[in-house]
Image 1 (cartoon, rainbow, N blue to C red):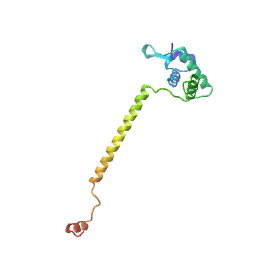
Image 2: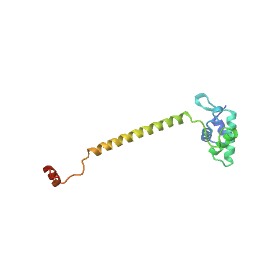
Image 3: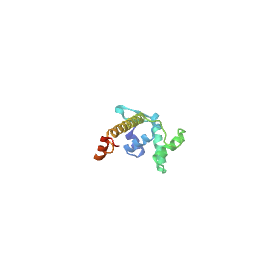
Image 4: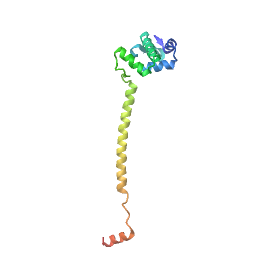
Amino acid sequence: MLTIKDLADSLGLSTSQVRRRLSALNGLIDNHMKRGQNQKILVDSSGLELLKRLETLREGGLSTGQAVGAIEDELGEGDGEKQREPSGREELLREQIEQLQSENQYLREKLDQKEDQIQHLLPGKRKSPISRFWDWIGLT
């Protein structure tokens, strides 16, 4: 099993570049990764081969996303686009977004109700003193 530092040395990349590549290959490389002592990421030789293929495609002019799509096509796991199972964090974020949207809608409805209440409490168009006098004596 290879550490991120070993992968960086093998591929001629920085450790942060290796981390970004691993993140891009999420879903494809998961079966070739595990956590070691102190939660270090460890990748087996098949994972290294996936990373090497990704780098070959990138050197050929593809973006990382396009290269991942090409690898998915080669493995028969995709339609050429970057598709993968959403991670637990992504699902949590989606749930939080839905909750915030729901809360936002509720607050907008409450705001509309309060605006209506305020409009009902505001006095109408003010009558002139002479109009009020005519109303008082009953001539209108």
